[in-house]
Length: 144
Image 1: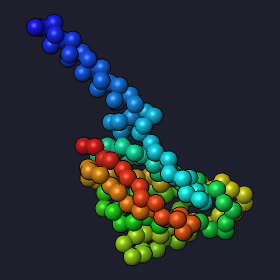
Image 2: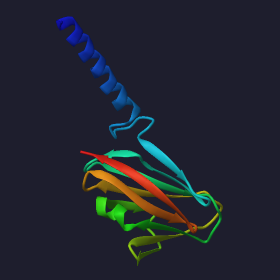
Image 3: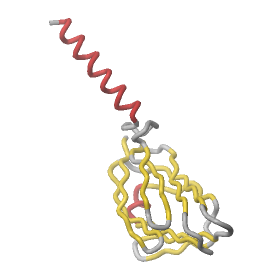
């Protein structure tokens, strides 16, 4: 009996280690990040993050424009705070239940924006993100 319990325990420990190594605990790994493709940009953000942990959301604009706009719906800001934006937006506008960030751009693309975020609560965040007139639903799971 003890031998069986010990083997099952070792198996479960191995499964927990594998889950963590793959990124399902929000601490790195191949499944920790997700990539969302828009017509004008590519967004890389965490799929799973940890409560009160810092993370990055990066936006790579792929089309030549004088300025790029990103609109992020309010449910994102209910769960996350923004620690930094690099480069700083040229303009930040409060829209209806969203925030619109406008970035000036010069030269040939790609142009990249990095946003440092920190989760303030745990749970599931589903929010709309709009780039170039295209709106997609994005989800992030925040673990305690």
